[in-house]
Amino acid sequence: MRDVRAQISGFSLIELLIAIAIITMLASIVLASYDAARGKAQDVQRITELNQLKNAIELYRIDNGHYPRENEGANGRIGEGAGLDSLLVEYMPSIPIDPSGPGNPTYYYYYDGSATCGGMGTVAVVFAYNMSQQTGNGDEFCTVWGGEGGSGTANAYHVVLGRSD
Image 1 (tube, rainbow, N blue to C red):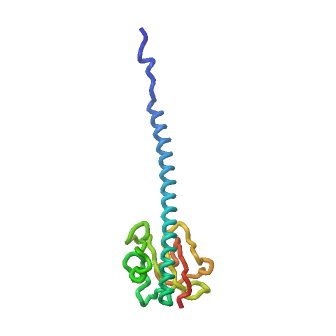
Image 2 (image 1 turned 180 degrees about the vertical axis):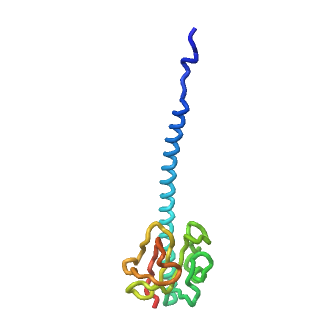
Image 3 (image 1 turned 90 degrees about the vertical axis):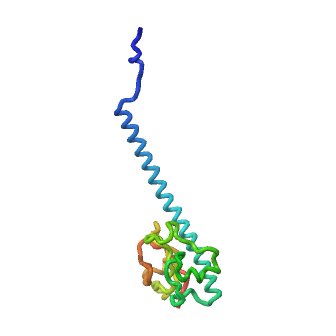
């Protein structure tokens, strides 16, 4: 009679630990790629929403002859109850909020109706903060920033609407 134990084979503890380590490394690579893709998708959503805001603000300018002004309460965070929200409600069915959610201190949209922009003078600008890119529509003439809302913040994507003075 043969010894049955000699025919049974299995993995040793070392082999199992190596397999678990390889699976863990592959999972971390996949998760890192997913996180980067999610961040890029949020940035694309932010750019799309900034362009929608730009269109609504341009409609406001056409109707009123000027961009929303600070004395109208326009400057401030967008989508969180600032004055610009009430000025744009007739031009947009819903005011966009940053994909990270309202009240987020790091990611938000901001409107400044009187930012200083290099050689352009005073301009109206819409910002999205902490994106993976730092440029935006009109960046070529906006090398010198002045204004409120942290317009000089790194990773601030901005859309320059036009001269507000």
